Length: 311
Length: 193
Picture 1 (spheres, each protein chain N blue to C red):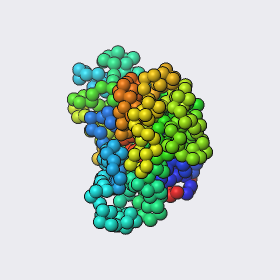
Picture 2 (tube, chains in turn orange, cyan):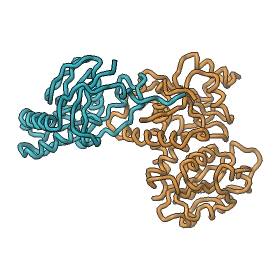
Picture 3 (cartoon, rainbow over the protein chains, first blue to last red):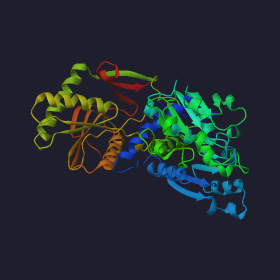
Picture 4 (cartoon, one colour):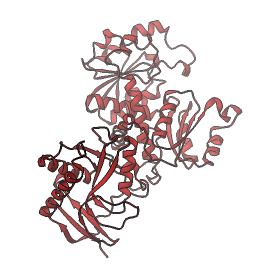
């Protein structure tokens, strides 16, 4: 029997390994719906899901919207540009107005770390964190785990390299939490200016060169440079970054022969990843996108159950 | 909060045995025979679709019996999972384990035989028909059940029945199957007063 004792999904950090497994197992089941002639089940009929995206996003917002619709929930999208936040309304005022319309689930993307947790204390609906600043992006970590598990059959004991802009990456944080909870050995690599202080305390090994992280890796997760999150340049130029930290065929050869290459997108071709690798046979980047839908269905299903309980 | 509990099973006591292993085997063989007699001459193979999980085991047994009879092409065997189609998904029941729906051949234009262990309110069958509707348009849908315990809440009737039993609302019928590590038998149970 499946039990999910949380009202919200705010981050991976506070989830138990069994919670992660529940979501992954359910996600695998929901994957089948995408192959049906009618890609829709009536499970969440009559539930309302509001996608409140106050930071640009195409992939994640579309993924949540499709997930809600495949479960027959009504999905309403509110994006930064069209919302009253541009008229000066605060997040909490926006949220309380939305809550007054009685949605069941609010999916929030926001530039401030902790925004989803704050929202969860103020509204009645369940809150799903779809990325809060450089803090967490739990659904991305879950779909990454689902992709890894599908290819490797397990997560425990795998060597996973996460390379690039670690400091500004909520994906890296959520990935490290999830992979460590599930027993993987995580290697973080990036230029020192993009490695956060205390990264090792997250439960990962930290390298300031990419090669030792790639050595013997079963999985490589490449991250984009999040220029929008820092002002002054933290490395000389993208050509130099690419030369020292880009994933190309030569560096990929350091990994296990059956290693898979992942990227949360959007990818910057020729910067963190060589086009030959991004389009190569080892890349599973589009499969991540496909699994994102089923993982988000699993989360909406678990939170949409009403009585699934409070945290 | 405390995790949700499984449905209360402990306060059910066994009242009587409706079928033993021999009786169950006999009922299934008779159903297999009737299936062949009534549907075996339609041209296409008989398409059995079990409702997970009990019905799927029974559909697989019926398929074996039909295959052995040799009177008709080997049957097609599928299974549906109805947990996402229930009308009581979120009514305090424990979250169900969701199994895959497997329909190995297109159901368009075929005669589909839904197989379930117990027919009670009819809501499970209604949900199973909704699942089929999302996969195609069968020419007809028939219903085969091992036990019809009455007390329908929807206008649904079986076409092939193993045994019929009158029950009270406080009673429950449980089909035990060797596929689930139990002895084959069907028992009538009642909630302890």
